Amino acid sequence: MSSSPSAQFPVWELPEVILYHIVGYVAPPTHRAGILCHRVAPLCKAAHRVVFEEARSVALWDAVLAGDYQVDTAQSDKRKGTRSCKRLKRSPCQKVRDAHRHVIDNTEFAYYYLSELAHKSGKAALTSPKLRGILDEYGPQLRINHRVSSGGAFLVEVCRARHVKEAVILKSLQELVEHRGANVNTNTFEAQNSNLTGLCVAAVRGMPTVVKYLLGKGASTTANNAGRFRLVTNSRKSLRCANVTALGFAQAMRQAEIDNGACEGELKNLNKCIELLTEQQQTQQQQAEVAT
Image (cartoon, rainbow, N blue to C red; front, side, top):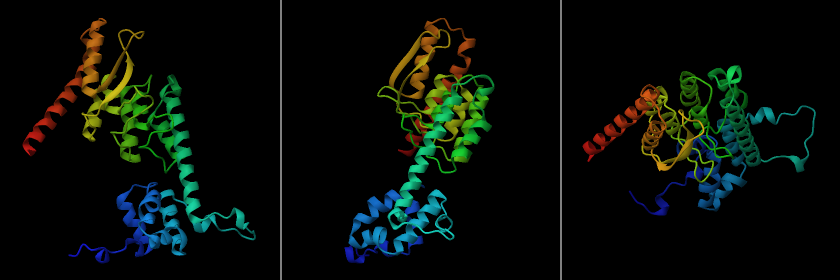
């Protein structure tokens, strides 16, 4: 097969619906517009015209609106007995930008209310139905796997939830991962010295069922973490670690608890988390040795 430029098929000459679906294999929803603008359009003048200028670009951007943002342009543009000013008329590309900003704003709102629930107690505390209600109210299109403006992430914030049982956190995580497409390896970046994954938070807080669930969903045991956690035995003291794995952070927390007088019973769940992480790490090492 020839590899000369003349032998390569110009992807921008494909029908707009097919072009949209091809881009769908390259990027997830709400990212496809960026691929079209920054990857396809700059290829050549013909590609730029297809994406931005030609009449067929209307159908392409309508497909993006309908597929990525669930916006029915046929219904939204329908105005009975009214006239629209040309100056205020939005192009299909501009409509996609507006829809994308709307998704970002809704994601910020949803995260804010989740964070509020995660820090409340009693009847106002986080529950799986409350989380589902927030996601439904501001969804369905939310940037679940992206950090918000503060650097926080949905999955990590659920693992941080206070004043709730471990079972509640587990059910909330199942809602995020299994029904909302959350990535278990999403991490926070709230400050230069605060970078945490959900697995690390669950391990350090001593939640073995959550750790087991996240590991089963493919959570990385090698990701580095940085942050600070209060000790259970002495809430006035805290432990800060940087550039450590979830296992290393959990082991450091266990030692800090022991130094502050923790008994074996108080370390039961933390020890279970360390065992799960150690077993997973050993399994991965064995698989790597077999592969080599």
